[in-house]
Amino acid sequence: MVIPSPRRITTWIMRHPNALTGNQREQLGRILAACPDLAAARDLAHEFSSIARERRGTDLTAWMARALGHGPPPVQAFAAFLQNDWDAVVNGLTLQWISGSVEGQVTRIKLIKRRSYGRASFDLLRTFVLAQPP
Image 1 (cartoon, helix red, strand yellow):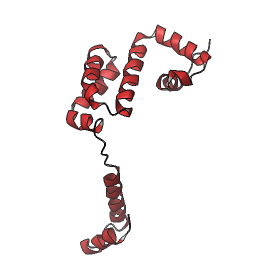
Image 2 (spheres, rainbow, N blue to C red; image 1 turned 45 degrees about the vertical axis):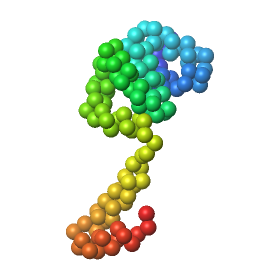
Image 3 (cartoon, rainbow, N blue to C red; image 1 turned 90 degrees about the vertical axis):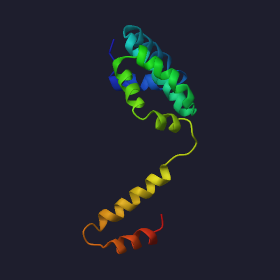
């Protein structure tokens, strides 16, 4: 039996089970049976993905408890990292507002600034920022 690459296994884990062929499901089942930590990581990853997709930030507390208590070390590290900015994570997974347009404007302004770095006064940069369409 040829052992699939880690990238292929990761792809199988992150896909919906119905999207896998019978052979892929069988191989993934054998791999997960041989490595319980990988099976736990898969379950936690699927649950987190579902929470993010469906914007159920209120369910994150229960997921966090399971991840910190029973998850493999990399998942525990990820969960601990999320705790650093808990309110922002919960709001990002709950609220409908996104900051994409703001980030786009910031990137555009930085590009204008870099393009004329050291050669333009503040007034000229202000004119560029206000005159160029977004």
